[in-house]
Length: 256
Image (cartoon, rainbow, N blue to C red):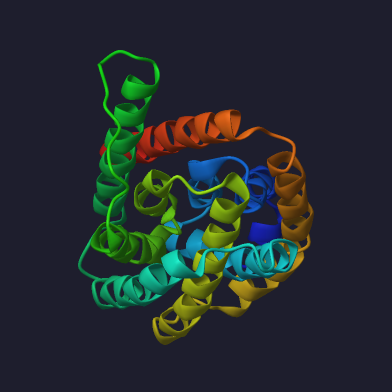
């Protein structure tokens, strides 16, 4: 797209909004809202290019969050999550030229929307619910693999990761810290297949460099909000974000 990319005010406006939302979500406040980043940018540029621009920005956000939440993550969950996520990224790279972007959006949207609506139905007392046991390790591994897979193409691993982690009923701070480690690992792993698939053009890298400073500010804002919101409202916001973001992905996948 040459130099027209930087001169396009629509792209830069959407990029600013998208990166702030993603950064706040990565700071631990907002749950599934992190998936809106690529769709925001993709309103002005091709999806693959938007995903490639986002990746370096995401890694910088992850490192900011990793420092801020240091030592608060759950190693028990991470031992289940990380190997499975790495496997999912490998599947995503191998299927890069097979699955369409809209097919991925529809799949992610259905998973997140179904899980989020189920939680809200129980939370609002629309059906009589009984206490269910915390899912076992294979539940976590399976959905972590899905998260790694769906994260690869459009950086939308949030809903499957929430399916994996939210039923574990972790303390909000531990939950936020664990998700930060998860995405730091996944996004760093994604660098190698993105390079192998020639996604990092000079234009992509320069654009990412210009946008990168937004990330740390947004992450710190998310951490500030996380520490001042009760667990009750934290999970309400997370599940609301899961429903909204999943519905958006599903809509985009079915209409474009």
